[in-house]
Image (cartoon, rainbow, N blue to C red; front, side):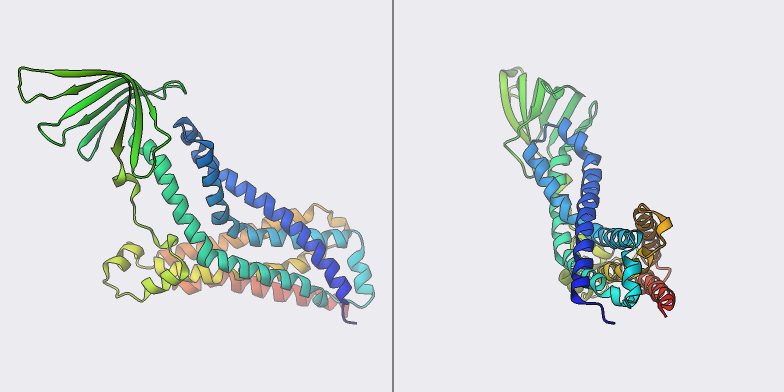
Length: 371
């Protein structure tokens, strides 16, 4: 008996619902986890809600790629686990619908998830990663520059912040010196300083309050000082934020173009770094990882069909265990490839081969119970 389309639509609808719920929860967890790493420092530095919202939007596509296979695995295990616990799978099998004939909805979702993962890895994620890193350097570059109690040389300017304060006075005891020319050298000192939110880019803009400007006069017997209540000034921090992209920031077409460069080309040497394998690793990584969604979808069906006594919560626990095992294998393979232990294709495709062999074994094992 061939499984009717009505049954397939029912399985597809159930699985898709749980997959979307899992995708939302896992993506939200990843975004919040990574945003919290630098949220406290950015808020303390006076970064506005608009910049934080922009940063969150850039983090989303950077991490949703990794949430797709996990969410699909979660959705299939939960859906088939519920149907198994409610006796629906037993009813289907008693009507002559074997387990292999329940695979098409899962395979279809796996193929869609694989295509979406490939698109994200090939194009969306690199662009989002590069934009996120640029934004973080612009926002957090100031935090790297400002070291309370230490003088920092930035080109021709010298920056000193005595201590960090509260929201009314973020920086206490600010001194900015300029020695770009003998006739134009000066330094400005202020009791309080803060960031000027209206400026961005490669300049760190300050608003100084209650201070004075000390100017060097050509006549050594004279001294000039100008007091001010409020002054706006900026310091060039391009050396901190203008960093070249790495191989992780390149789109797939750009990776292939870099791979075609001569081995001694300076651009390829910079991208490959010390290991000499980063381009191969990135290419094979983006080719192999999308297949995880398809293979995990197949292996999830026999894992989801379990005895009633296993309980409804077993699907979530199984999803965590399977995905943790896959990520461990994938990470070990990537680490081995980066260190040159073996070819990049071997380390990054081996987890897929193992999952494929496991899925074939599980499907054949559970299919024998139908005969």
